[in-house]
Length: 401
Ligand SMILES: *Cc1c(COP(=O)(O)O)cnc(C)c1O
Image (cartoon, rainbow, N blue to C red):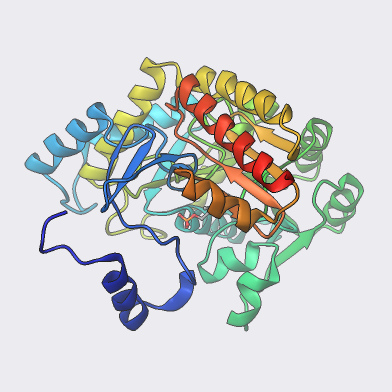
């Protein structure tokens, strides 16, 4: 470690003094670089990254194709504003519309912003039509972001009650309850239903196939728009480009973010059909959204996903990971789709498990005290999965004795 670097202790102190305490106590690590599925800290310790920057680092760390796309674009032009045409932006819009079978794209910088754009599109579309329905329906325990509107859409009071008064026009329904959805749609106020097909942040809970199919049909019947929040499930995570594809449904609006730029902040709102006419010139915009650098990164990510068949790989490796975890006695309730996996740890709580795994050189996420969450790079290798499974066995064994 070179002499002008701060120690963990000093960084922690500085963070405590000057950074808003919104992240609470962070993991006691300072990472300096990454190689594939591995992160290396300022003490030169290596950690297997089974959380992938929370589903962001889909190509792992230091992917050569992504690094060179970013470096080459940065040397040419990082940003020029949306007052001018941007070649990468147009190419990315075309590419995403073709892969996701949508008609139009809008780029912004985060998942919350993409969902905010989706909400605004629905509202503008309805306000300009005869049909003035404006309620956006979401599921309990959902997570859609932290802007005022997306926090209100989020079906967890801890994310919105502190910020009251909240914007009106949102309502929630119980997760996976088709009768509750039917009832809400029948009252004639719902403009759109917004869903995560696999709830991520609240602990990796996938909706049932029958519910999703029925919900899509009900939306069509009641002329309610279907927004699928693919911020976490998109970019091949579940074994398909979108989870909507995996479930075999067609959404009116899809949002993407986390994995889209492989770590460079970029998000997308994709729409199809008549709702695309909801936005008129001046209705929406973004200073940074879809700039030359961010769109170069996203194009490189998609190219790598296609070139290395990472969607099918996510499906295969997700099954391998789940099968291996299911064999471990200290592991219960293994769930998820593709490389979006969670399990319930036995004998000790999830935070204790997470810390033990960290000491063993492995990074995972925890949700509450009963869920361990895994979102590894789609490039994670079979032998890295095996390394992870062996470490889980070890930890499980320690806690059972
Ligand atoms: C992470 C997440 C968001 C918010 O994304 P940000 O980039 O943090 O704004 C929204 N929806 C889902 C499903 C997410 O997982």
